[in-house]
Image (cartoon, rainbow, N blue to C red; front, side, top):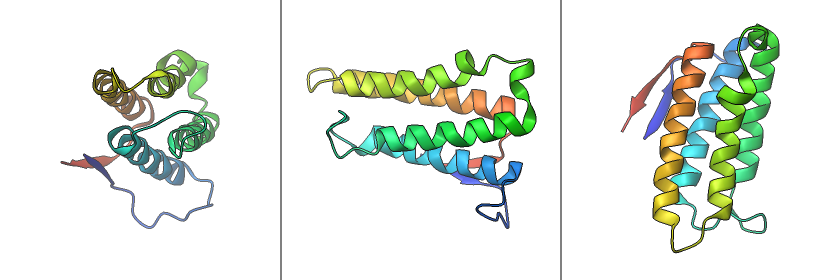
Length: 128
């Protein structure tokens, strides 16, 4: 699955809401690919799981500050907890349960995408 941004003429580094939404979609794509492709997720592995989760969180925080969404929405419970759940589940998984954990993480990823879309009104199309 690939999310395709609907944001045109985005200037990276502009600090605008459009840039942050663009980056959130990009890092959601990267996180999806890490869940799908990587075989090991531990701290000492070559996985990009932690950096992509961190970068996704950074852009969500930028957008959170820009929109003041946390004034009426518990972003820790609704969004950041889902990112942490993906990271923790994958890092704690072993070869015996990796298939089940990956399916769980894809479900959490979809919930996270839906929540981000609803809260921040993200615009994208889905290419399978």
